[in-house]
Length: 307
Image (cartoon, rainbow, N blue to C red; front, side):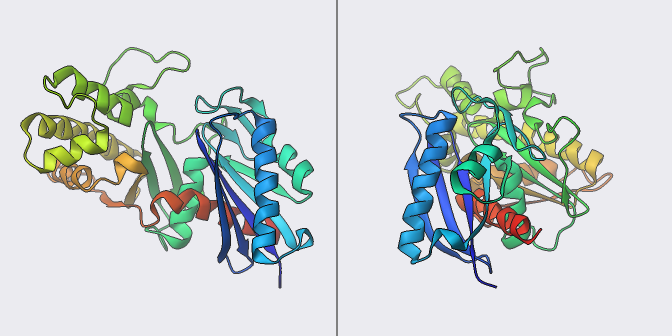
């Protein structure tokens, strides 16, 4: 059967759109910036313009479109297609994104949290193919998870399942997080938390390094960078161990710019080596990288078209 679907990844500063055929093959991609205007109206207009561009590039008509799926950062109600709130997009609160996309593109639309979309992508074409119980753990500026149980994404009744940035584990702050404030775990091992910790202990001209740059420096043998890497890996290892004990997940897939760093993976595995009970979780990095969300959006759009 012919036709196309649209996958959308809405980021804090960037927007990516893909056009795929019914077999899931991406035939055209578009990317743009949301820095100048990230209001819901402006983003939807950008998506509409991007879809028009991709259809022309692929030599397809708008009549071939079957469905669109979009991922947004923050708490998202997939059933009703509403983005409740996100700190990454100004002015986004209780945004009926699915309805806005339906009105703009005149096709069925579905909305999902971006990290949960990445979990769908990894399950379909990535590191978790064939795995029924796993956690996709995205570590970038912040940290969040997509939890898959018995082959299905777990959302929770308030759609906040996977907000693991609020976990409290040894080495993280115990004070309650306020509104629009990073949670305990995120404040320590999110990219910004790692950078701030480095700034507090670094005394030379390298104070303004990013988390990945700090980990890279650790790989050269730098003592202070190794200290930050070790602290980050230990806290991440504790969090993974606790999640594994609760969920009995057989696999943890690390994604995001920070999460995919080789030094963090290696050191976290070392931290978890002694913890064999009730089981030692397997930890690997994403096979799809930055494309996990977009590929997950395509899969969700195909499912929407088929249903």
